[in-house]
Each structure stands twice: as C-alpha cells, then as structure tokens.
Length: 153
Image (cartoon, rainbow, N blue to C red):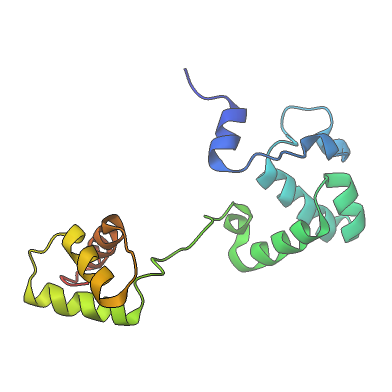
C-alpha cells in the first residue's frame, strides 16, 4: 500500500505540526493547498510577502508561522531557491572528533599498515589522543576518502 501524504510529509520532515493555526483562505478548504505541507506553506508565505505586499506580522498570522521561521525561509530561499525551503539535516555534518591532528595520525598509520581494521584504529586513537571514536566513524571517513579517489584517510 502506498504511503499517504501525511506519512510522506512526516517521513521527509516537511510536516507542519501547527497546521491548525493557518488562517490564509488558500489553505482553509481545498485539496491543492495543504496547511500540513510546510514547504508549500513557506513558499506561499514568501509569495504573499513579495507579490501581495504582506507584512511579516500579517504573513505570520495568516500562515501560522513564526516571524523567525519566515525570516529564515526568506534567507534560505534567496540563497538556495526552492531547495532552501526543504528541511536540513540536523546535527554535526562532519565527524568532529576526526580533527586535523587525528586525521594526520590516521594517514600516517594507514600508510604504514593499510590492512588495519577500523576497530584497531579507534583503539590507537583512544590511546594516543585520549578520545573515543567509534569504529563506524572511522569506517565512514575512510569510505568517503576512497569514494573521492584517495586511498588514505
């Protein structure tokens, strides 16, 4: 059975939990404009600001979005276009424990002993730098480097 729109919105992180606060006439009765669709709601909010001369306060009230959310949507839309309205991945984007010195150490060890497993590399990092790095973090970093055409971390 195919997922419902609601399930798809939740799975993609684009579900608007404040749909009941949307008052704009486009979103009240209808099939096309869905107050639960956060991307559509943000886009129509920006359109109303640009084309219908809504103020930020008026747009926030009509579309059920906070003013900071609208300002953020404006900035992301100007920078990235429609893609800027999509949710971003939360949390760290890079393995923050694999800093410069740790990476240099891994490069050196991998050159000398390329067959070492990530678990052993994690153990050596713990001993040398007194930091806990999960073997999967090392494995993913190694894979990312190899994917870019480099053989060492």
